[in-house]
Each structure stands twice: as structure tokens, then as C-alpha cells.
Image 1 (cartoon, rainbow, N blue to C red):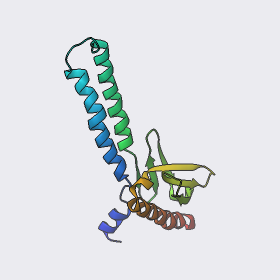
Image 2 (image 1 turned 30 degrees about the vertical axis):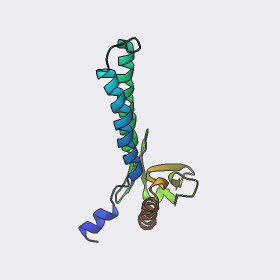
Image 3 (image 1 turned 120 degrees about the vertical axis):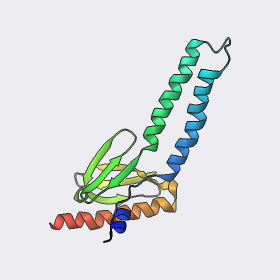
Image 4 (image 1 turned 45 degrees about the vertical axis):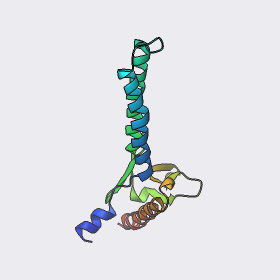
Length: 152
């Protein structure tokens, strides 16, 4: 396989609509809260405590949106590193038994050889056909690399 083909094959899975929602929400919620907390005129309802609350909310919202916007799954020759909102987990290809994205699933779910499951928020149903194509690409990687590793 050529260098470009391998790079495309192991391209990181990232949701498209989540990133759009993060940017829009960040501008509106965090940006608006920060503007009110820092630049609004003093008044009966906007004392120092209220200003601190607005700024604290903006900081928390930016942190949460950064975590949401950073969900991804990074494949390589040895396995898949999944970063969801809270946790990061690494699984080897042979550990992945199946890749599911059913009508009721908001994102891909991996069935693992230990009987557990792992959500892959980096591939989402909200992305429509793009999400389905990415699920098929992950399924193909699991098929090729999981079987190749088992035979070794």
C-alpha cells in the first residue's frame, strides 16, 4: 500500500456535527456568559458574585465543550485508541469482535472479546452517510487487522 493510502486508511475518526455544535455553543453560551460577566453594567442584579458566577460558568462551558469537541478514535497498525468525553481507552484489533451502528445507536459501539462494549463517540449517526461510511471503514480495519493478528 502506498504511503498516502496507508495514511488515509489510518485517518483519525472525528464527528463532524459535534464539532459544529461545539463551536456554535461555545460562541453563544460561553462567549455570551463571559461578555455579561465582564462587560455588563453594574446594577441591582449584577453584583460581584453574579459576575464571578457568569465567568465561572463560561470557564466550565469551555472545558466541557473542549472535551466534547475532542472525541475521536485513532487507528494504527496495532489497535484503536478511543477518546470519549471522559475516558481514553486503547484496544488491540483482535479484541474487537464486532462494530455496530444500529438505528438506535447515537454512535458506534464495539463488542469486545471480554464480553464488554466500548462506545466510539468519534463515529456518530448524526453525521448521516458520512458516519455510516466511517463505521464501514472501521469495520474493514477490524476485519483486516484483527484477523491478520489472530493468524500470527
